[in-house]
Amino acid sequence: MKKINILILLILSTLSLESIAADCEQVIESNDALQFNSKAMTVSAACETVTVTLKHTGQLPAKIMGHNWVLTKSSDFMAVAQAGGAAGPQNNYVPQEDSRVIAYSKIIGGGESTTVTFSTTDLSSSESYTFFCSFPGHYAIMQGSLTVID
Ligand code: ZN
Image 1 (cartoon, rainbow, N blue to C red):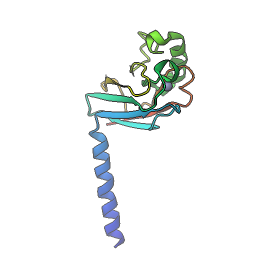
Image 2: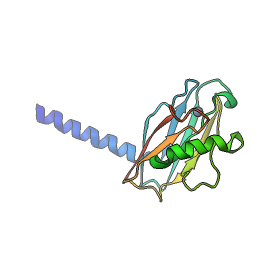
Image 3: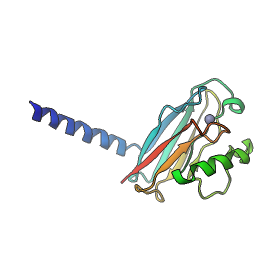
Image 4: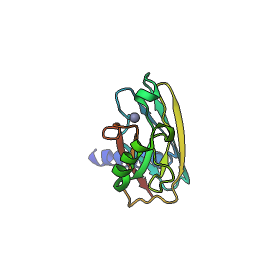
């Protein structure tokens, strides 16, 4: 009986890994309470490109509770997040032509959604990545890890 249970567990974990690996299009939600609905995202290097759809399920306008989705190496996260504040709303609070920025979406408000597509070519499974919202003051809470799997 125990052996059967272990076998079932093995099959289930294999299935869930495969479904994650095939997920080249991902959706993440944000809200009026400064939260993403995920703290950890996983993308497969087998995806040539990954498309992330950011939804804002709140009601507050972008100038008050704007959110975006920005991806950097974890080691670049803090510096880019701080530079984003200086870049201002006209640049979606993202430093422009900055090679540390792997991908970013525009800032959206409640009820809106946006998508960003990026290549996995330069991403590595041995690197640690952080996604965050660069709206001033949000990155301390609105952040999570992004892992690349081969
Ligand atoms: Zn935000």
